[in-house]
Image 1 (spheres, one colour):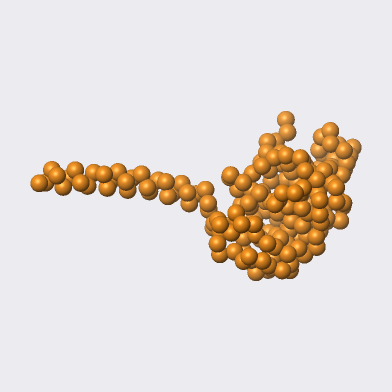
Image 2 (cartoon, one colour):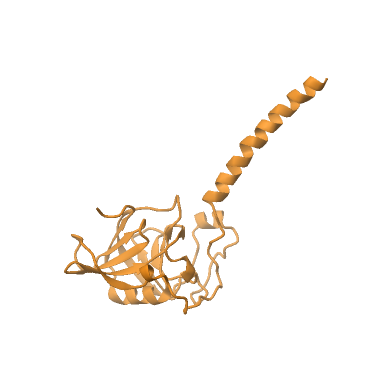
Length: 200
């Protein structure tokens, strides 16, 4: 009888050991400790680390002036100026599983844009509002530039402390002062190149 009871427990123990690591792995991939915070008004006095502050830098590229180049691995967005220089901004990028690369154009620009989370985001984060009007507490921030026909955007943020981190669902976030600066510099139709690996 004792041996029979042991045999009954063995499958249960196996299930426990299988389920625990799987659950831990899921929580690591879907870490919501840094998620969208609708309604949070950003502290605009927050100082970014020096490397993520807006600055003119030396930058070699074959892309023409006016092109935006995003290096997701470096957490930088470059606006090509020509003569081997670019304006560099710190950005937040997509978390693991939400990073991408490609070539698109800015198809629309908006000031203090409204926010309508796509169904995929609602499914992952059901606590999010279905719609939020533009304003200081909106996760889209002060400006947004829409990329092609995708759900991806370059936009502001109400979480300046996330710059330099991989926390988004694929969009590129900037502090409001930087997105306003970039917004004024580039028109609709601007070429946007997204790269995952640093240039050699």
